Length: 426
Image (spheres, rainbow, N blue to C red):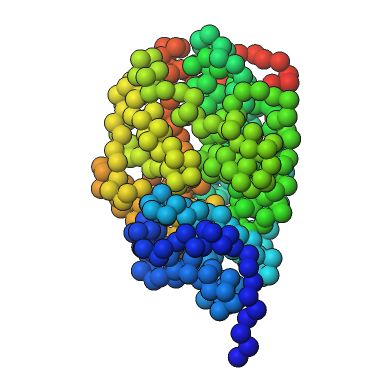
């Protein structure tokens, strides 16, 4: 048997930094599923080393399985004593695999269609409208359970454009709300709530510019060139603007905060420094002092890319916990991944289902009425287990805007002020 030629593609310093201690294993949801070394960070890094040394080929089916089954939650980075940047290593590996072995079959077609759609906002929105119609008429039940969205999409939310609420306090400046692809098509109600919250604490929210996609799905799928192009397009769209770029999707926020690493330019690093999660602009003190009561008991699910990449899980939890009358419960699973991972739950269904089952069980042990999560993929995944999932922005708007408007109609569309045409988007 011919030995494969050495192929150096990984960061040698990062590979060498891993001391194979195994601290990462208990944090890894795929290792917890199979208890096999090849499905944990330590085994995956060993495989990368052997590929770099020429002992294995990146085309080896066992190597491909090891690297492709990673959900890219990056929980291993949080506990690693050597500070190994596993995320960049696994993205390098996935890019090489995708170039050598482009995804084929149903999985390949699904990935290709999704990555084509995310750059076409009108089609994503049309899909949201069709889904809302189908759900209203219960026609969505003809779809296979795995691809049938569990989250209910209201037709009114998909058809209404964006209107900006008036600032509720002395204006702190413009805040540019990143609309993205899936969020704009299926979670427009979350965008409206986010704008209300920003206005309530004194920002002037803006829905434009509106680049179509941050590139996170492309990066996770190994489509490096596509991810670079979308990152460059997003940066260019905000040229000439000043102020924070607010992202209410944990995965998008994580990707955009790493544009500096992805592109390696000063422009990209400056852009990333402007990206802010909502929990970085609103304080628990503001919510506690000004909010009205929201009588719910919810389990907190920290999206992986908020917790492990942006390192904002505590801030997000504290912000929601500050809402008067709301009881927030912590599951006992140490906030392991729910198994969504962008397209992961569709491409790796056995792993995705196992992770969802563990997440569902841990949430049910809390006795919560529902779940709060700040990521669309997590919301759709957890909804498959029968949970009502709230975005933090919706709960904050219900509290802060309700306090200002004195009534449940505060969240209705007619509470928005009339604005100039350049602030509107379809």
